Amino acid sequence: MAEENKQVEATEVVSGQEEATKQAEEAKQEVEVPKPVTAAETPVEPVKGANVYYFSNDKYYCVPIITPYELPNVYPITTDAPSKDLKNPKYDWGLMKWGEGDAKNLQAQIAKVEDSVKALTTSQASNLQINTKMQVSLDALQAVIAKQTQLLTQLSSQQATTEAKSEEQA
Image (cartoon, rainbow, N blue to C red; front, side, top):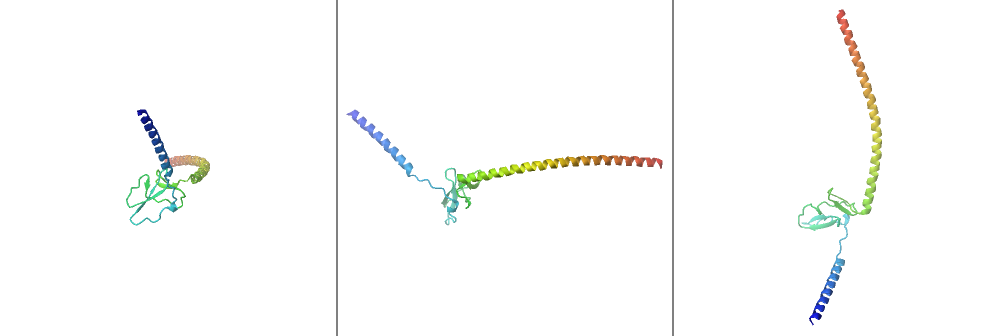
């Protein structure tokens, strides 16, 4: 009889654990994750006496929060409103400004940056050629100035010699 009670208790514990596991899985499925909010969907005018803040981290890009409390502008809450032209705004905490959080738009931004880098590289090569030509011109100018200085020195030396001879004769 005692053995039967132990088996019944063990069966009840196992079935209780299975039920708890099922409930936990159902609870996970029932939790709704808020969808990202675009800047156009955020409230423009806050309720009187309420403050509008924006929650932004790696999981939730832009979640508006309306509260009567004053909150500091500290990660993950900011008082800065996202720009209306952003499709999926995400706050960049390193730069302290809103940026695009959508992967497609990020790829477009990366392509623009790559184009800018190519343009800058081309510009740099062009500037290097111009700098080289300027250096050659400056070297030539420096040689001319050195030659003129040498000639002026000779002329002043000759003039001094001529003046000295004329003073001796006088």
